[in-house]
Length: 348
Figure (cartoon, rainbow, N blue to C red):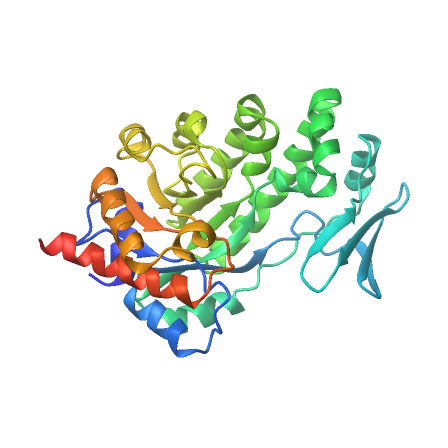
């Protein structure tokens, strides 16, 4: 099997010739380096590319961005008054220090902005397809509708919004869902054949199962159904504890999901998760890019790879990291070693 065939078989919860081993993206590697090319060639490479990040605002919004030293100020003009976001950075860190929305009333400002849908850009997809061929899969990054309120409000205000003004939050997610469906369909019509829907962890880690059920499952099922109507891949990304959300992942109808992090970063009991999701959702990930694959010696990583493959079994599982985007050459070498373990186990 090629890497693409191997991954597609696993995503369909089938049994490939061996368990795929998939780093997600190139981390901190130089994209043009020898190790980056070796990683792509010797593993079952997954990546995403800049996709539909600003679909909520569309093309008619008036947004001004200026840089003041080590601060970026973004002003969003609305008919009901401006909203301001400030991002600051140092040589080693970057963070939002002022969020555009502070109270539930600011949702009215967001919804008052004139809206015209944006058109998807498939340039990055074409570039990745040319580079990967059959040696991996590139997915279009699509931000989950819950990302709109979660990134418009500070984490504290986002949580308070669900407690104090849930109807306003529901309305914003509903509008974001409709706009997400518009850009998703346009992307499918433009030839995009796989999506990585990211952001569900905003609800699962900050708001809890009830909010996830209402604000993520319903909208994401519509998105997933639409993606499948076009025969495309629906791959979801959700950090943090997932054991209380397995039934909801099945309800959404996704093909595959990462990261299923092992403790202490998540709560995944791999055999239990596999037993519940068997034949429904492909498990991707489990080993932390930064804290495990990028820190342990090769033999330790090989032992963990053997254990995870034994626990998960040969079908509906892709052994990988947690898509941190920061791993180094050491982790790249360990990903290659894990792929070798998978081959050895398949041939045993």
